[in-house]
Length: 123
Image (tube, rainbow, N blue to C red):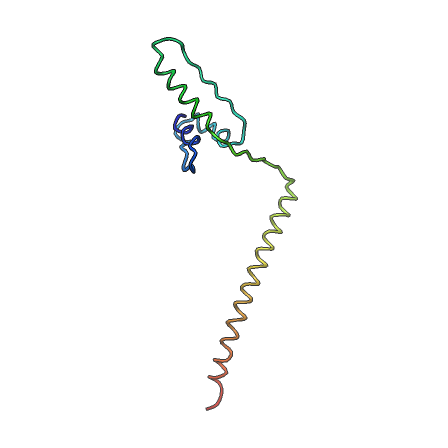
């Protein structure tokens, strides 16, 4: 958990975050990525024998506090509307692809016709 919190709290561009290193971080992956509000409770002991553990807990809490989450709204759309939208996107993509192929074929055929007419003309 500490390594995941450390990677998430780094200010520079984050690379790979090892969520799969433990079951706890795997379960909390969606919450730690910013899809939920989370609260982390760190408990310490005032005993002298637990000084090192309390210091490590405070360092963990400071790293956890520095995590910045980028919240995204999950919108659930009607299945029919979502399908229609995806089909419209696919139709537009295919139409542009067809136009580009037609323009390439038009340019190619214009270059080939003079060559064949030269080959077929009598000497």
